[in-house]
Length: 544
Image 1: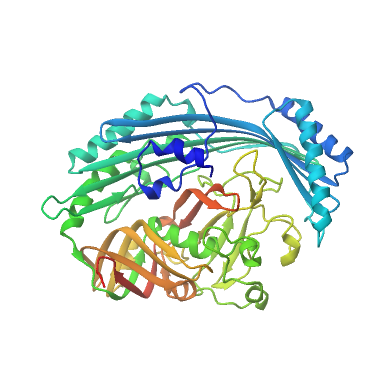
Image 2: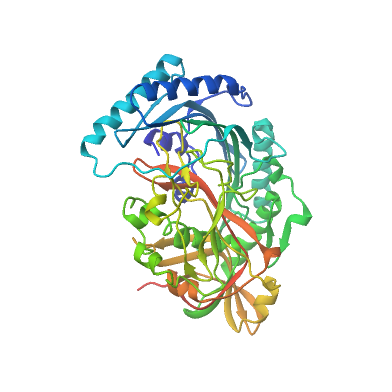
């Protein structure tokens, strides 16, 4: 992320954690004015200019992304609007192979002359790079799809909803929280629309329209007597959906210790509950450290999946090609080659998935023209695969890419990014209530909190938003000041039960960072509530 973009966003005065996840923005555009993008026929002619210029200059392979990204963000605090950002960025990125080596160039000027010049520059860069080449690029074969298109299935384009309506919603969220006891409340909404046209010398001309939405808030309650504060963040997920996500439906609610949400989010209801629960946290008892059976709601488990399964199964981390943002991976090739590396219990099935509706990572095709798919990474507790793209596939004996290639913007080169990584539901009928009945001493955790993980994605610590003590099969009350610690193998091997598909929900992260220069992408993680036995719990408020 660029420094100027951080500065641009800093006026929102959000929490430090939230600020670290902000997206890249482009040129400011007027609010509520979104002009149509280029016609697909024009984009195809532009693509042919690039591909022909690259081939004429000596490229053996070339692809072009013609991308326009719209970003909208609105931030409020209490009864004030802090920021409205409405931006657009567009241009072309051209990637080539020449002399067996990659080259890349980009241009914000979309004239034929500039596109051809960028293509030739990419070839020149590849040829210069090839002087230090050790092994030529080996691309997995990919058929050309011809002229195809894909669009995120949405009911309401969030960019068609007036800014005022979004501000009114956020201010109502804030007012609801304040009316129910909150001392402070921040709320925000992020909307992204990516118009991507991909073409390659394989014969693909792919037009895609990708939508994402993230409404979020944080409620703070101050105890005036002690001066201490408690917070509760929103429990809605970022989604690959339209504005219909913010039109609540009773049928999409899950009633547990608090109300949770599937494909529709009642942000106002959640803000009311958050205010009440942040108040209740003050009188909750502080957790006694020790071993507990943990019952983890998907709103908590998604982050553990992301860090302990998603990042370690990225093949570039496994190979040591990527180490930014928390290191490489303990899931080394020798473990995969053994065919019997025990990652978790036999209940643990984790998949890579680029097709799940409503997820942040769902696309029709990735950024090197590979069709989206779903595949096993952990099967019956054993490591069976990784996440790979076209120039990595041969390393693990794949005949085709898994379609994990992505670039944040037209001026970034595409590389391997995490697809949706999800824990598959249990096969036996089981609800969270059924699961809790069988827990003698445990904690039921809802929502994500702070976390840390080591440089090989092995030893970790995760916290949460809401903690409920379980004794002899019943929830006895709220506790606080807790985090759980484990290592990836021990944790996933302690998984003894997973609720069925009726409890399956998506969580996710809007701004997952990776690479150098850093890029962001959005990814979802699905799960049903799961039980983990005998996990070490610490008290986070105790001082040494």
